[in-house]
Image (cartoon, rainbow, N blue to C red; front, side, top):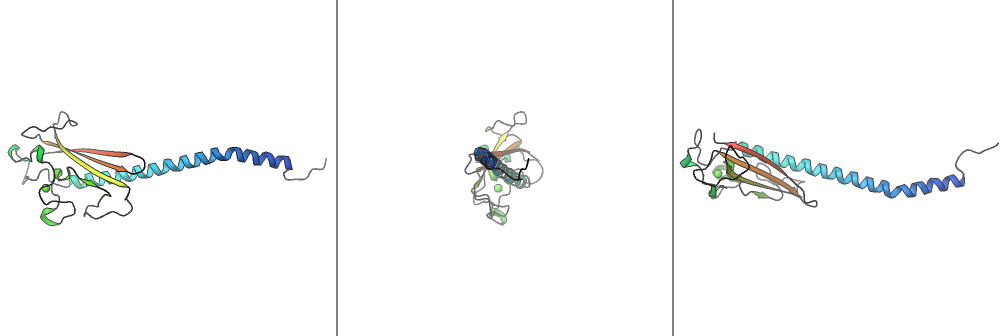
Amino acid sequence: MDRKSGFTFIELVIVITVIALAFPTLLYYFFNVKASLDEFRLRSLAVQLAEDLMEEVASKKWDENRTQGPVVDSSKTAAASLGPEAGESRSASGATRFDDVDDYNGLSESPPLDSQGSSIGGFSEFTRTAQVSYVNSSDLDTTVASSPPPNYKRVSVTVSWSGSGNSVDVVDVFGNR
Ligand SMILES: [Ca+2]
């Protein structure tokens, strides 16, 4: 039997029909995969932003009043006063720059700033906040407001981003040293 190579009309109609039927499904999976990748990218950047700030916090002294060695109870910053001292900021230079762990209490940056206090390009959708509180070594999750303060400061850094309502938290505890 003599048969020409290539598609017959019927075969062509079948192929087009199959593609037309599959197209919405393919489109759906394409956009789902893209959304997942976008989400993964934003989450990775958020974790990096949180860890960057935590590294900066770790480089500071444990308390404003620390001179050498552990801070004695009477010199510890009161729980109600955790936060930057008057005039201090992350972007300042010299004596008014953040210099201790609890200066970061109440920090809120949108967008986040780099360690020199300058804007970071490409992170406009992110907001970075930090909370610092005293905790006991026996329960690192519960804030302690009593006096004298305990020997541990818990730092929680949260980075959120617009559009998805998602956020990441990085938590660390710093001992009186
Ligand atoms: Ca300070």
